[in-house]
Image (cartoon, rainbow over all chains, first blue to last red; front, side, top):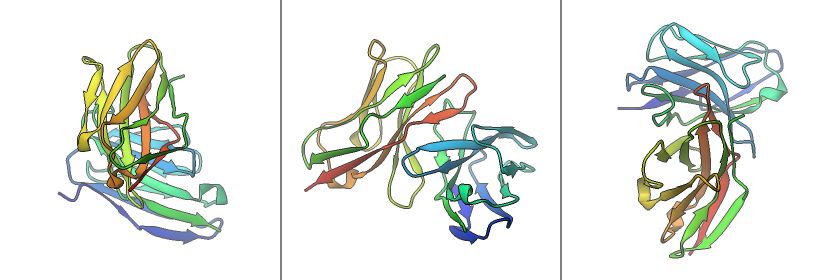
Length: 113
Length: 112
């Protein structure tokens, strides 16, 4: 199993540009999550999904959108990139919710200039 | 609000010595507590969790954590540190809305 995969690994955006961060898991997990990690701040939940077709906001959803059309994929969309969105983004998945461990992807390092 | 705090940004220990990484929590109701480790340029990896039962929880790589309800703590421990244990460690708690709240992290450095 590849686990949780994310693409791209690195990206530089200009202010106002848009992009989609891809996330795929092959463990048939129904729960998936997007976090951002800022230096010294731990991880903050952006959006999560409890299954295909169902998404919900986390702690810091502004400026982002998600969709969940399949169990495997959970892309994160940035519509109008801002410098405040410079961060490392992690996708994660878990079986049956957050009582169980979450499996994390390797992350995407995004810089907005 | 549910939260965790990691009071130490950095912990330094010598190889072979015991290590402790501290975590305190604030929750309503029964806490679901977790420890994760992050190696450089990698995603977080699960170490262990406390849901219910024994206060001493054993996890991966020889780590264990002690749940202390009276002190609202969930400290991570290992009897003998290895240089390869050097990493960033995160404590987390699941809140009432099933959202995982992470601490700011503690950087552990184990020196030979």
